[in-house]
Length: 284
Image (tube, rainbow, N blue to C red; front, top):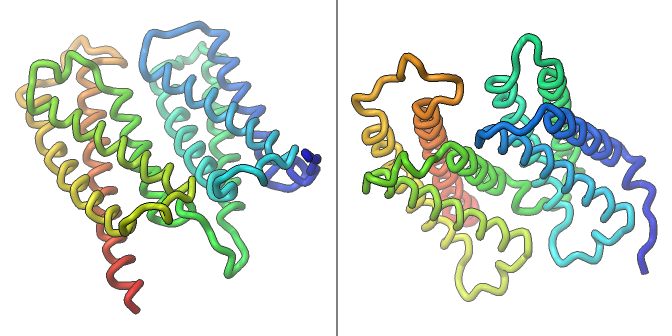
């Protein structure tokens, strides 16, 4: 039987989710009235607001109807992870959209940018509330430091994919290797997240923690090679063109370089932390 739980919309977290749904709806509605812009950054911002609106509304409906209690995965872990991901995505959209698509007379674009910043604050508040658990209460994988770093790795990879263009790497084996690194690491990180959320780890016939350590080491090494190869092949002896606009292809190469360096750092920290967690803390 499906019942109704009013606490889903009357508790502080529920009220924040209602606010987030309304704010994200305002963002993509304001931007949609301005018109379509042929840019991956515009598409990313619209995807961010639509994605956050849809899943926030879905979470509210599932908790209000108590259907979430019947789902075959860790619901609290999923909602905490979504709030973290949504706050990161809204932060990114709040920086990208006003940087590339606003002007002094663009009132609706400025309004969407301001609302997006408020939306980021709401999601960040939800993260703070969901992370403040009573002492002794277990938290899922995505609420731990390892899970947060896994989400950050996939998020940075999405920013890299957003900035990639086929013409940038189609004629260079070195750059094609970098794209393969981004793709493989993204796929395996998503797989680890899904296995953890779905609580399928116990069904695997091997040690999942040690497998993750091996993957983290390989991913960190691969990203370090990409961190060296990408700027060497894409930016070597290439200066920013004088007539380059705000959506210049050269800027996208720099964006990929910067995100590659950040993700290499995150994968390295994730490797060190997972090794310490499995071989040091577990043996104490």
